[in-house]
Each structure stands twice: as C-alpha cells, then as structure tokens.
Length: 320
Length: 291
Image (cartoon, rainbow over all chains, first blue to last red; front, side):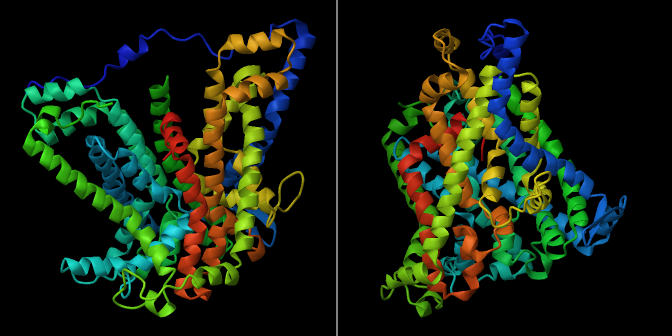
C-alpha cells in the first residue's frame, strides 16, 4: 500500500543548530588562586548531596557486590566465593519466583502497557471533558499504595467483595481471586495497573498531541480505517515514547514487591505470587541471610541494568 | 484548541457522527468514573458502615445506617494523629533536605562547574540504572551502621531524610532548568559583585519557581507513598509513617474502622493533588519520563 513512511527522520532533528553550551563558567579565570577559590566554592555547594550519595547510593552499590560473595555470622564476615549464588540457585523457590516475576511482567505488559495507551487514545479523541478524564486516571497514583492495595484486598474478597457482586450482574460466577493460584497473579496485576497507570497515560497523551494531523488525513485518503490509522500513524509517530515506556515498565514490574506483599502476604496460594524481590526480602529480613539476598539481588541487577542502559541511551538521544 | 486526531472532523460533523460521539463520550465518562472513583466511593462509604455491614454478603452499595463515628474511632484507636504527624515531619524534612542539597548540587554542576563535576554528575545519573529494590538490603545495612561515623539511624528521621537526597532525577531536572537560564542574567549579577550564593538566592531561585514546585510536590508525595523503606528503618510503632502504621495495625482493628483509616491516610495527598494538579501534570510531562 502507498501509505507514506511515517517515521521521523532522525537526521533532520540533528541538523538543528546547536545552542551554545549553556552554563559555561561565567567567571573569568584569573590565576591559580582564583581558580582554587572558585572550585572550593563549587565543591562546597556540592558536598552535601555528594555525601548523601556516597553513603546511601554509591557505597550500597559497592556493598551489594561485596555482600554477594560474603557470609555474615554473628558479626563475623567471611568470603565464600560463589556459595551464595549456589544457595539461591538450589532454593526450590528460586525457579518459581522467576517464573512468577516473568509471568507478572508479561501480564503487566499486556495490561499495564496496552491499557494506558488505549486510554490515552480514547481521551485524546474527545473535545470535551479531557481535564476531568485525565484527573480521574491520575487520581489513584496519588493514594498511598498501602491504602489502594488494602482497598483492593476488600474488593477482591470472595464473600463480601464488590468484584464478585459486579460480575454477578453479568451472570459470571463468583471467583476466588487472590485465594486461587490460577487467578492470584492476575488479580495482583489488575490492582497494580489501576494504581499505576495514571503516569503512563499522561505521558502518552502528551505524545499523542505531537502527532501531526495531516498524517491522519493522508492515511484517510489512502482509505485507512481506524485501526490502520492507529497502527500506521499513531504507533510509528509515538514509537520512541512507547519504547521508553516499555523498557520502564519492564524495569518497574520486575521489581514488584508491595502489591503481592500486601495482597497475598507475599507468597500467595501455593507460592503463586512469590516474586524475586519478595524472595530477596525474605532472605534478608526473615532469614537474616544477607549474602543470599545480595546474590539474588545481583542477578536481578545485572539483568535490569541492561534494560536501564538501553533506556538511558534512548532517553538521552531523545532529549538532545 | 482543536488539533486533528484519529477521527476526522468531517465525520464528526455529520449527524450520525455527532450522535455517536456523544454516546461514546457519555459511556467513557460513566465507565471511567466507575472505574476510578468507584473504589474510592466504596472506601469512603464503607468507612461509614457498621462492622457487620462492611463484611456482609452481598455487599451494599449505600450504607444502611451511617456511622461517622468510625472515622473518629479510627483516629483514636489507631492513633492516626501521631502517624500523620510523623509522616508530615518526615515528608517536610525530606523536602527541606532535597531543596537545599539537591538545588545546591544542581546549581554547582550547572553554573559553577567544579573540577570533576562532570564525573560526579555521571556517577549520580548512573545510580538511576541500578534497580532501587536491589539496593534496599545494602542501604538497610548502611542505615544500621553508617560507616565512618558509626551511627545507627534506625528509628530516626535521618534514615528517611538523607537517602531522599540521593534523587539523581531531581538533580538532573534542576540542572537542566538552571542550564536554560540566560547566561547574561547571571553575568550581570556577578559583574555587580554578587557571589555565587547571592546569585543563586536572588536570581536563579526566583526564576526557577515552577521546577521547584514540581520537585517539592514529588518529594512530599514520595515520602507519603513509600512503604518498604520506612517499614524497614522505622520498626518502632510510635515512629512509623501512616502507610506503615496502618499496615501493621490492619489485622487488629475491625474492618470498617480500618477502611475509615484508609480514607484518612489518602486524603492529604488527594487534596494536594486537587490543588496542584496543573503543576503535577505539567511537571510529569515537562520533566520527561517519570512513571
């Protein structure tokens, strides 16, 4: 078909004249003494934040790597090589936690990625009430997660919960939701999507506003219907944002903790909602095995750092 | 303003299109209201029910009898005043720390350009690539025994305040904004003999109000919403935040009282949102991606 290739040419963007470097030193360098003084002042402004980073970010990162190869017993630290990794690997919960986390990620991508995009598409079509709809979608994001998660726990209750009541209206039999290993994870994902979709929806809405209208007109002249317009115009035009959000979603959902922790006590029926981060939590704070927690954490870190690196690279390319 | 979207204006202008538009619009408004306000309505109204009614099958949509005293009971039994004050104390302390230290750092990196500044910024931004939950264990051990100073931060507000400063995203956001302030403006001030602090205070900060507002709101909401970290570092029930306190009391109070307390815990950030929704929404999209 003759639909124009509606992808942005990245080269066009780069040809824009670059702004002169902002924030170049505006104090003229006047000799060694002055440079030293300027640097002392500058580092004085930096020191507070740098110390916080050193103690609570950089040092813990290093420590995470060290811990993974150490064992702590009654305050005595010893190096144990790859033992912690072996312990973690041989734990029967290991495989299940990864399967659950991947399953959660797949479900969360199906729901948490597609639902906000479709929601944004719908809201964007209306010429009225956009402010109200945006407000509604973002409302749950502002609730403390404890409140929304406990709220969903009540809504899911097989006896007095509202969800079964609503399904009953449509003649669907009552579900066990969180108590059934088959539906527990799905229930967790639905709650999580409700809680978190606001941010993504707003970002998609902003991206949709940047799609040039002429492209839709051109597609219509070629006889494209609604779905084709979405697929051949909207998606390619917003593809960078979509890709960034996809990566972000993967990074966030692989770290899911609070929803399963509060909804199903962490493990869920037959361990059906044990996630990797919950397992880390258990090792560290229930079994006091920091080494195993760090080893498992390191595996997750290595995996997610890959996604993060791609994300950061794309994001920077987008903003330059 | 009406920009061209998926559905063509010509299609909408036809009587059939118009009718269809309004039907869809009404449907979506009702559906969205039910989906997003429904649970909140249930929360507020179930807080008004008797304990029996709150857990009866089938559930009721409208409370049979109204008991506003549940909210009072929640307030007293769960000592919500204490938890609320704690949370406010942590949230505004974190806000102060972030505003002072992150703004100073961003200003230094953007304007004063110290030796190794680029490397420090790089190291800060690199922390964004490390999944936050992985760091919880080593961070907890650090809080347990801060190296060099040998202090235990458990149950102290510092355990919330200091880590909140390590927000590379904030620093990045602020630095980008400071970068965009015209150089001439600042040069003129330093020509007049203003030192860096003076320039920051009298020129940079006043023009940066929008970004400071966004950072402030996210700082407060961040503390309000956090769960895992405060649960770990504030084990003493009298020091806990609202989110953690409600969780730890969840099994010891009747359902309707607990639900009432959920409403109370949600109110502050909801009100903050309704007042500042414009800033929050623009901050979300202007500041790039922050889901």
